[in-house]
Length: 275
Ligand SMILES: [Zn+2]
Image 1 (cartoon, protein in one colour):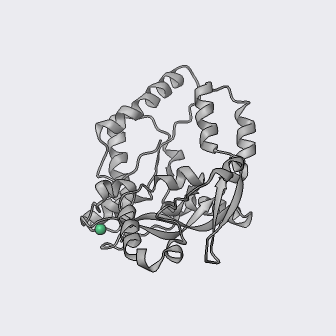
Image 2 (image 1 turned 120 degrees about the vertical axis):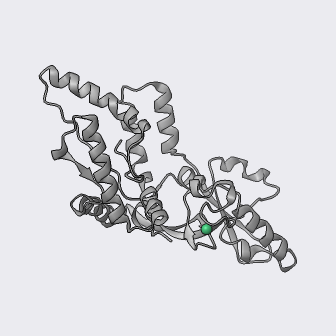
Image 3 (image 1 turned 135 degrees about the vertical axis):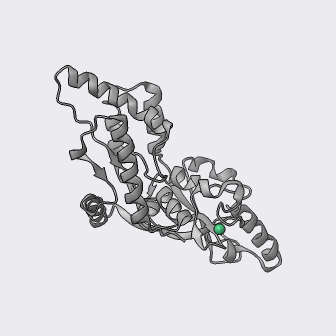
């Protein structure tokens, strides 16, 4: 795993991780092997942005400075990395390929936009990562964090569910790990059922794996994030419902997004701008 050059240098915890491959590489070199042992920088994203914001330096300058310093430290440690193979995710020669991959996915209908709830700071007017929104408040300004539906780029990995499950069988992994993988792929068989709303043209569509149990339905609970809540709320309940929805938006976790939808939200990597 390549380091995030987000601080001013390596700390001992970094090297604790890297020393292992350094030892194995030295051992293999001494045995006469040609060893591919590269180093690189996972240099886009939140940690780099936050460092730049905190120190009031443009992220491209801060990132280049941090990389230079970490490299100096690695030279002092005498790590045997092959610097001809250095990878830097902020290098246009590198990210032109991640962009190319994205375009291929887009052309094949595998990248699409969808509205998803994200942590939102109404004061900073920006999206926050879960770790920036701990205890329901914004790490930067202390304002109460809410959920906001924003258009996100999603990758349709569900299109590969069958193949992923099939190929999982061929892997020589422990059953426990395989089970975790297949749970994560999360394929399920079911049906979408429309429930008509009394006295309205609205309908509520639900997904169920057990349509045979539908006849036992006696009431329905809607999630506070459900898109048609305003249209379904009666005037006399409007205030109470809005209050509940707002309070829920400051509590629930955005984690569900990735777990439930089984798609990767790549907004953070492609679209996020510092506020
Ligand atoms: Zn804020």
